Image 1 (tube, rainbow, N blue to C red):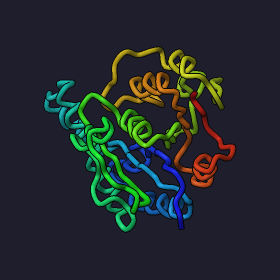
Image 2 (image 1 turned 45 degrees about the vertical axis):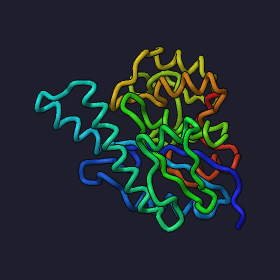
Image 3 (image 1 turned 135 degrees about the vertical axis):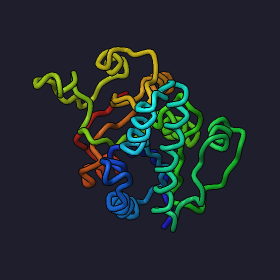
Image 4 (image 1 turned 60 degrees about the vertical axis):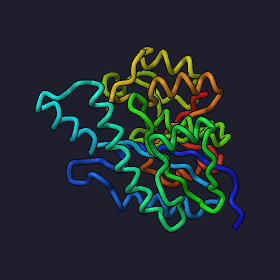
Length: 239
């Protein structure tokens, strides 16, 4: 099978690391792989730290060790642990190591050439502290010449306001980046372990680069397939 161009997917940490007793959900990872195996694309994948990161953060905070710089450092490390586990699940047809830290930085900067042509999957982890896996996925899209990023979450899209606070909030099927900035209140900083649909730095860079983000739940794999294959899907497109 001759594979088509790359698709860049960020799997939310809450999907792969959802709870204290399931800090990495291998069952979900295998189901997700089974879906992607049927599709005629190459995939650049990344995931976040999810519950695993939050458990470690809480342990640090309980010890009074909550310096923001330290939390950034730990957050990068814990998300890379999840990316390593994800790569192992995909290892039969994946590039044999996670692209992370300096190697990741050098590749997205164009200072390192890596031949991925013999692989269907590449797992790209975290680079340096201070950026999210949303931003990392965006940089991979830029490096691979892809104009869209698919973000899978435990929510079904972006709403007009936080539905936890406003029962009348409406799912937004398609919004501009400027509308997205207004919805999340135009924050100026990235908060480790923060909880917004798209990290503000990734969103601002995507706006400048003209890259679209698809936001949808990762729990409905048939809907995920629709988004990947260019069909109408339940979720939000930010452009």
